Structures are given as C-alpha cells and as structure tokens.
Length: 327
Ligand SMILES: C[S@@+](CC[C@H](N)C(=O)[O-])C[C@H]1O[C@@H](n2cnc3c(N)ncnc32)[C@H](O)[C@@H]1O
Image (cartoon, rainbow, N blue to C red; front, side, top):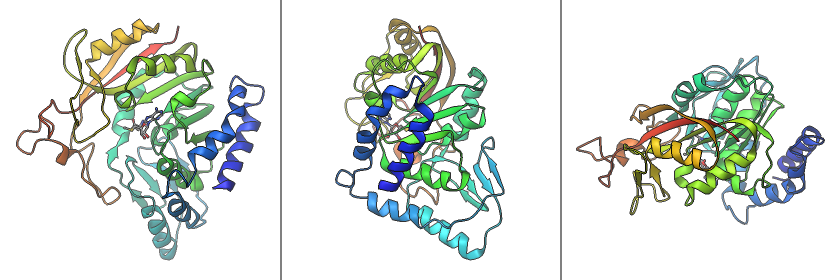
C-alpha cells in the first residue's frame, strides 16, 4: 500500500498547498498510514493483490454522467476474465452501478436512483470544491465530478471501499478526485474549506447526530451547501426513534428522526434555509442481492409476511434528503 499512500500524498500536496485545505496536509500522512494499516485490517493484503491484478487496458471514453459510471473501449476475452476475477476479489460491491468496458458491475444498490432524487436541489457544482462524507466506493463522488465540481474529496473509513474506488480510478484516471480512508471526525476542526458537503447514509450510524451536523457545518465555508441524506421515520417535530436493538438487521443504527425533526436539528445548529427535498421508501428493486453482492439484502431484512415492517417489527426503511446553507 506504500505506493498508493505516496501517490495520494504527492497529488494532494500539489493541489492543496496555498489553499484552505493546506492545514490538513500535516495530518494526512499518518491518517493514510493508519487507514491502510494491514495490522488493523487483515484483509488489506488480499484486496491490494486484487487491485494489482487488474489488467492494464486503455479506455476510449470515460462516462461520469451516465447512470453506469465507467468507461468504454475494446477488451479481449482474456482481459475480460482477468478484470472480472480481480473485481470479484473486491466483493461485496455495494454502491454503483459501474460499467467497465463491456462489464456491467451491478452493485447491491441502484445508487443512481438517489442521485436523481437529489440532483435537482444541488447548487451548480461547477468550480466547487466538494466533500462526500461516507462516500463508500465513491459512486456519488464520480457523479459530483461529472456535474462539474473542480475537486471532489470522498472520505470513508472502510479500506475495502477505498480500494474499490481505486479499481474504478485505474481505468477512469481523473486527476481531481480522491477517496481517503478517514472519518469526518478526523478532519481538522473548523476547516471551513468546502463549497458543498454531502453526508449520505452516515447520520444514523452516529451516536451523536447533532455533533455530526456540527462537524458538517464546520467543514463548509459560509453559505456553502449541505446535502444530508439519512434514514427517517414518519412523524412531526421532535419525533425520534431509537431502535432498542437491531434495525433492518443492522447493529449500528442509533437514531432515526422524522424529516421535520431533522430540519429542526439543522436549524438548531445554525444552518439556514433548511429544506426537505425528498422522502422515499427504499424498495427491494433499489437495494438487492446481485452477482456482485451475493449476501442477504433488503428483502431478507424485511418481515417476510409484511414488507412495511423490518424483520424486527419496526417501520421499514424510509430515507429523506435535506439541503441547508452553512451560517
Ligand atoms: C450506508 S453507506 C452510504 C454510502 C453512500 N454515501 C450512499 O449514500 O450511498 C455509509 C458509509 O459511511 C461510512 N461511515 C461510517 N461512519 C463514518 C464517519 N464517521 N465518517 C465518514 N464515513 C463514515 C461507512 O463506512 C459507509 O461506507
């Protein structure tokens, strides 16, 4: 992993020196070393091998605006087999879909559906520096770059998702996008450097949701736009559901507010013009088992007799998207 870390450091040093992100450069070397430490994550050497075994093929065109982010170009049968084996070495692929040459990487999630729900609410991303908190494999980060952002930084503590991003980048070769193995809490405090910050699918994993909103606020420049997406429940102001145990088989779900409660929380920590842009029930067409994610998925996380309930008997997953402006 030393080569990957060194390449990231060199690129970001060049790009961030003299910008508002320069203070981050001091902590970045130890954050990258920690995030990719095989002492902490025993599977890293195996995933790294998979990444190194990707065939070297030149793409003819790169598609960042298609629902299947990826590239076109011709490949031989042998290269296709090698590509499939290498990418299967990075299983499970949760966020996508991607298309590499003639290979459709059909991920667990149709993440393009979420993108379409939010894209109409985005301030024009051209010339914006964007942070994608909890970016997973970087699917939405690619869409942000495709929408014109001048720079996209995705952060996600999962080393597997970081390496999945690098597998796609191996073919797309875009200079102004990086995915780094860190959490939002590890960002230098009060950076106020980003024009747009996305936090999608992260808030319900945080034990302290208001602290998460404050950290998002402090990553944004004044008037910068926040796009917040999370699991919610039906209800009015001050409705919050705290699952006593698991929720839809997930063990790390802390807090599900109603969309209106969430809007109130945004206002409470100082955001302006908080708006609910979308509320949608997650369907088993949007999140499902595929050849690229062969484990159980939403269908098995719901009550087999009543799809409006989770397996534990709680209301089935609903997700809301909100936008707000930083103070
Ligand atoms: C449900 S996924 C959402 C992925 C993507 N943003 C989306 O909306 O499809 C949540 C991601 O957040 C990451 N995550 C969890 N806690 C985080 C934190 N404190 N800071 C940054 N990312 C975090 C997880 O590793 C996971 O990949």
